Amino acid sequence: MSAECVIGVDIGTQGTKAVVFSADGKCLASSFRPSRLHRPRPGVVEENPEDQLASVCATIRECVKHSRVARENVAAIAIDGQMAGVIGVGTDGRAVTPYDSWLDTRCAPFIALMQKKAGDAIIRKTGGPASFNHGPKILWWKKERPAVFRKIRSFVQPGGYAVLRLCGLDASAAFIDTTYLHFSGFADNQRAAWDASLCRAFGIEKTVLPRIVRPHEIMGGVSRAMAARCGLKPGTPVAAGCGDTAASFLSCGATRAGICVDVAGTASVFAATTDRFLPDQKHRMLTCGQSVVPGLWHPYAYVNGGGMNLEWFRKEIRRESSLAELDEAAAAVSLSDDLPFFVPHLAGRVSPAQPHLRGAWAGLTWAHNSAHLYRAILEGVALEYGIYCDALKSLDPRFKIAEVRVTGGGECSRTWNSIKAAVLNSPVVQMASGEGAPMGAALLAGHAAGIFKDLDAAAQKWARRGIVTRPGRPDRALIQRRLMRYRKLLDHLDTWNLL
Image (cartoon, rainbow, N blue to C red; front, top):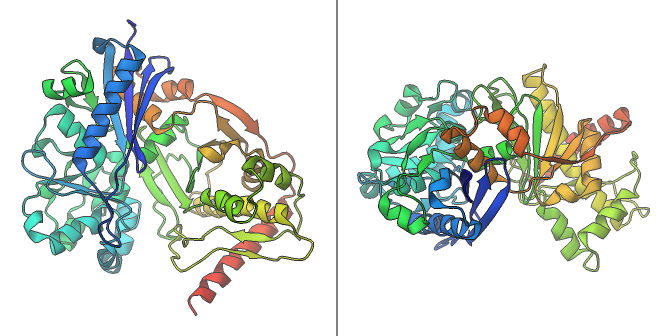
């Protein structure tokens, strides 16, 4: 095969996936390696950075082999990865800490410290609150493991670490790209720079923080040793890449203001695309991160386990039914004031942080059956999305949804898409291109290599739209009543759980 190709790699929580694409966006081959999470103690979740690197090399090698792409025709590589965890690297660019995963909760006391000391400033400057992300994790290593901290020359994320190792770079080249900064705790996100006052407030020297780069910047070429491991030509360009969420948004073509993304996966993520930085100090609900497209931003929020609730219902309550059968039964239930409500926060509410809130059905009568209960589960996520949109519009009254592009396992639910379309009063579009985050990384690789100059145009071409579900003529007054009642139910349950 003589045409130029690009490779996108996603270092996800479940595993690493690499995909090789032709210049016109056709998937030529893919490969996957599962992650190996270490949970030595309660609250501790780690990965070995060398295992992550090995999975990157192995999946790239398999992609090149199975696609039969000549190694000299791989124009560039880009890697996306888990966003909120950190890896400490020493002077030589090698890891001196394990990957401190975003699932690891050891840093909880330092979240409280950062929120108390500078909570509003962190949201205003970075776009997101202190959470199980970079700032509290860095403070944990400094305070709880001082001997290790003294060996650390910089903190990076899994994608950045893999790039350093692929290119044979040391800690002086350590970097973080702009799509991660809302998780940093110490950045001025609008300026794409480290904030001196936040660093000073927590005693963090800027020298231990990596340089900030743009996602499409070339960081180096694959070293001879790594080229042999990956089946690549030495010197193959490697771009900075981006966070996995940002890569997913890019793969859906969310490169223009008004295009929203619904990631209907294990978590239910709703993201908008805006031309303004919108830190949510008012509601503490939305996190606002940079898009890979300069000048655009992604305010987003999510329901932890929103998609998991569907499988839970099928497994525990309707074992004899498939999700497709449940979806069909729910489609026959007409919208009315008498329908029950479902609160989808079985593991606590994340956006905003209401960790003691738990799931519930409310408004049940003897007239309701399992179809009503399942429809309520679907509607619960849609109503959360409605709350997110209201919060966004209060921050930017100009904002209007152009359409919602849905990806993930739940995108196939016509009933769910119909409910979301009605609540959001917007078309919901399934994506026919299904490679997700690796495709976003590959788009960045192509942009970095100069295969296409306009990232927006390339993303719109690669992100093929599928079935469109339109809102029809929903009863807006009825939907607003249900949204109002749902808000009140959340408030009452949150108070009740604190008794």
